[in-house]
Length: 104
Image (cartoon, rainbow, N blue to C red; front, top):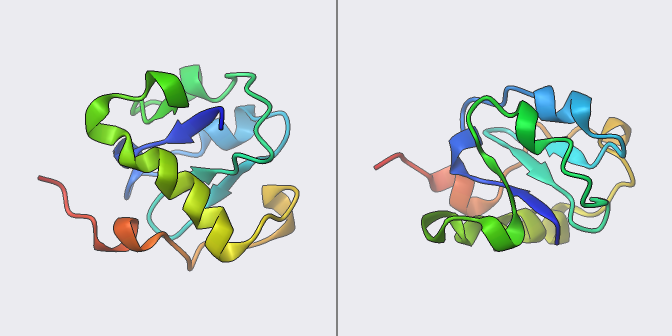
């Protein structure tokens, strides 16, 4: 996996990253955005435009957010890969962890 989106995106979903992504691999769930690891080309275009600093390269993810590496991957294992976010609407879906997430 290349880049992931972490808890700083939950209930914010700014979407500037979606605009910056050249391969349309950032999908909108109900509470947050997710990066499809099979579509991400590791270009990093999404990271600098995120106003909440929710996006990290997987190997640079802070320890407190490492669970989101699996969350981004599992989201697509559950709801499928769609070869571009513009091809599908997943706004009523979320990973179970995100559905239950409450800020500490």
